[in-house]
Image 1: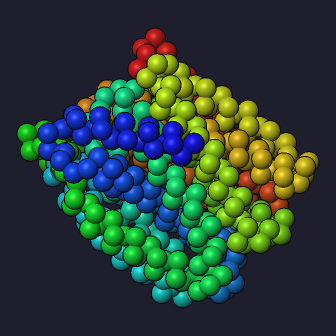
Image 2: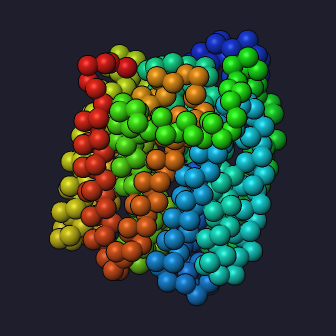
Image 3: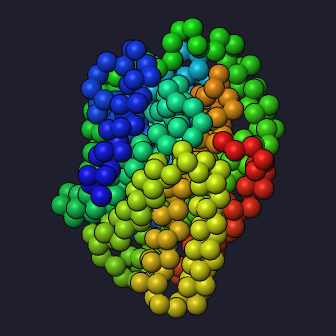
Length: 415
């Protein structure tokens, strides 16, 4: 699998560099920086997942309050994208990303010195506003260089590579927690932000002066109203958005379902979580190989069908307790694994009709995705009863909604 992953990544990176004369650094460097930028959403949360119960005890907060640190992050991440997208269309990609990374570094340091759940939530919002600049504009950079199903293929390849971060995040976070405590986890994020900021200026700007959108920022922001009325864009975005609600319910709910309810050791939680990331990597790799032949919409339909079926099965297991930990974790593994066929194709499908507004569309799709994540994680927090039942219920609703949203996409037009 490692050999296939490296080959797929190298081929996609080589094609990117061939499509822009300004791209002179080694192709692996471009791939690494774009993957790092897109991975900030994952690493910002996944690294501290095993520490959530410990953080709650140290800060004197209950499980619901600590789960709101995930929701707070998603609020900043969702709304921040709406600002960074038009800014990137107007001023290019690198400068806004650099400013965002500085905010991420400040927010991570604030989390490290927090003394209450309220402080932690506030600093997580700052951290998120900075982190989302890299994510939204990395997607726009892909659209600068690719079109249609090829853009979806490249996004899928990048997501395969960046999945290394959430694969290792809970494992590394669990070890840091055992050795040095949860505050060190956030100082590690400060270091990651500084390293990425330095690496950013080793890759070329992908949006030339001639292609930049010169309309005033207020007009650009008002343009979201026009975009949201586009039926195809909304269908693609909503299919990914419902799925994100399930993913962030999984992120917010599994530490307590596994560690508190099923008594899994925090350092072992990361290993169970990592299995889902392996599934995501495998389906992203599969998508990158098939999407140019079958089309993004067809692959998205397969993925959302699988998410709906596995979500309903999770509901049965969660409500009845059938199979215990192994049944629940296996079904959740199936659910999250469909990410490889849903997320990249949802974003790629939405981006394909708006090449001149890639930053704004990427921001709008990202805001809808992560806004749905807010709803998913908040629902798990609000319904928390000490059992896996709320998690299973939200997962099932997310799968059904993801599949149903494709009714908004016209199947007559094949991407």
